[in-house]
Image (cartoon, rainbow, N blue to C red):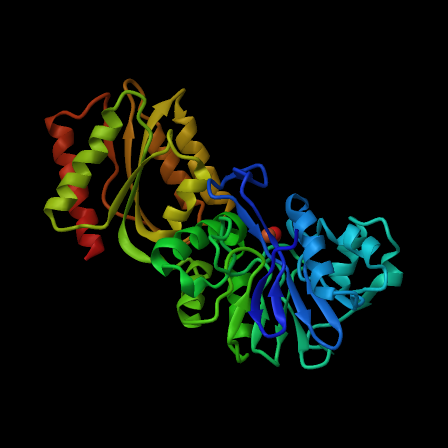
Length: 400
Ligand code: FEO
């Protein structure tokens, strides 16, 4: 049975919520499921804005049939061809062969790789800046390459000031009843899921995201309709500011994220000592994560969030312990920049992890090292404790 959400007099959310999925794209833990957004514009010409993942396509087709109410579907605008948004395009056009598919030539080329019908016959190619008027609404198309794939565009409706933003401003998690972001607590519900979504999906392409935000700054945007998550219609600056920070790799908070690997608890002990010393010195924004207990995709958003990192890695086979290496690999693959890094290494006979951690961060952009690397030999002794206290003092000074 159909299930739609009214956004305005003639605009509807027609997507679906997958509450069974626990891992997105086979890689990212999403305990709260996923929303796949699509929108219907009930104008003189009818418009569907993007389609949905296979998992929610049944209700999606029913939503469209319900809203068309016997009329024909005129346009399907495709902003992003990744299958979580285009998987239903093939069947939608088989069900509504009269509809024209609208997108740039890049989108057209990619759609060809996914569907069985004659794309040349069905497709209406648009260029950046061109406008499609459907009656009351006028849709202008804006290229947004690498947010998150190269073909991505966003669509701006000048009649309502709505930006259909593709993956930008998306969040993880199925909807909790209301479609509007302002019905939820920004810091508690939107920000963590959005940070997670941005850093694990779009994070590598910050400069492209920043370019899109700069282009968007010239538009009178009154509402943002992303392909995941909630419709944003109030306090838009708050959401755009959060995105701009991530895009420019600016930390959200002055504070220390402490990542440790510690098979027998001794490297953890070193980290706890630094944390306790920092607390004594008045530092109150710290987070400690055991990389063996967290997925790298859960660590990455916290790396974006904090200004400082303390990386405490034990040596394993003369290398960085594998779980720490996995966390570091994810930082590299998502292009993390602009961190202030401190290092603790542990090794019982040949401490080697610290040098490798340092070399790793030297390979990333805009990294600053804070304090001297501390070496723990098996477990913390009095002399090592003094080194840890000095490191804490250097980190505290850096945070000031
Ligand atoms: Fe939600 Fe890049 O797809």
